[in-house]
Image 1 (cartoon, rainbow, N blue to C red):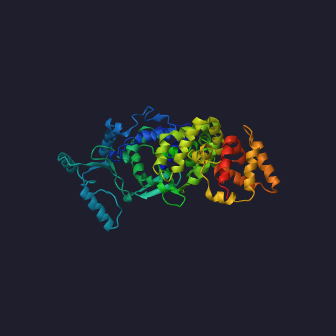
Image 2 (tube, rainbow, N blue to C red):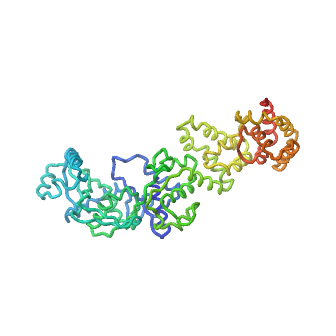
Amino acid sequence: MGNIRDALFKHLIARHSGGTNILRIEDTDRTRYVPGCEEEIVESLQWLGIQFQEGFGIGGDFGPYRQSERKEAGIYAKLADELLEQGHAYWAFDTSDELTEMREMQQINKQPIGYFGGVWRDATPEQVEAARSKGLPGVIRQRIPRDTTIVIEDYIRGRLEWDSNTVDDPVLIKADGMPTYHFAAMVDDHLMQISHIMRGEEWISSAPKHACLFDAFGWDRPVFVHCPVIKGKDGSKLSKRHGDTRVLDYRSAGYLPEALVNFVALIGWAPGGDRELMAMPELEEAFTLDGLQPSPGVFDLDKLRWMNGHYMRQRPLAELCEMVLNFARSEGAREYYGKNPEENKEILAGFDLLSQGAEADPALFSKAIELGQERVTTLADFGVATAFFFQEEPPMDQAAVEKWFSQPHVPALFDSLLERLTASAPTEEECEAAIRDFSAAQGFEKMGPVVHPTRVALTGRTAGPGLFQLMAALGPDRMRKRLERAKTLLP
């Protein structure tokens, strides 16, 4: 979620300012390479509507845009050699055992942890050449200036300072010749004319290294923008228990992309005023870096559900019907909810009911979606919310049956409805009249004693869409069968 938020912020500032958003694949750490990850990244971004004007899979003037390919093109090696020649970098041949021992001694002596030179920072050219001639595996490290103050201006936090003696010398080129993020990303930022480095605040500790690297080359620094972390409502680090962490899981769970975009944009950014519901064009128009907050953003799943419900209610009915049906039949949704089949059995059963109902009676399916549209918060909710429309005998809430069917007026109510609702297609007004007339005849001041048992008889539930609307949607045949069934459950 943090990565997607950063990508969204970059899209918004680029669109707001008329700039260029670049998609670059940073794949230099091959130990963390996951097959299919690049495709998932691109699919996630496309689903959310995050657009790029240049980069991987698009093209542009600064390609290639995959760092492993840039490494093969010799881009990084050439610049690393420049740093070595100018004394801003050096070869180091420490073994893993030596590095472990170094860290242990630093911990024992309560010193800053990291590589601050060892024997190689000030090694002679002859010592370096001797190590290389022996074939010892070596890395190229950045020579951080000592006995000075490193200062950067962060757009959100302002002036940040470090004692350079506490900043360790990072590896720029690994023993296998692959550049690290500390080197490749900064080199690419310069060569691709990046104006703003927007990333999570966990990178603040690395900012002095990156600033020094720009300075060593004599390059202008981009604007550093370290976005706040995202936390759960309980204040802890965002994790699986707060919600899904894969973006495409939200698609499989039944969320709309515009809702997720709106929600994510407001985690750590404020548009000013009381605005919360903002579509992508509104976000693009309003987004400025001045709205970014230094305090952690909060991931509130309840708020996301509320936003998602809002955006679903904005969809035209025909479009929503198609979305619901495609979702119910999608492999992604079934696989997502199938991970916990017992917990999600109602949702999974709802998928089948929606699919079968759309084929058997398209008009009823459309009406069910229309009546459910005002009540649900995700696409996955529709199957459960509308199940009674498509079930031959909806499951009965036993507590509701015991409470309402035991009322003395209910047998007469069911008989009255069976007599009144004989039209081929009773209207909502006719259904309402049947309920009101019986209620008035019984002397009830309110219609609750009549509405509730009728709803339970027809749907098996105590809550749902408007009673008169659902009665008209069910039609006389379904109502007759369900009322006759309800009569068999009377005490």
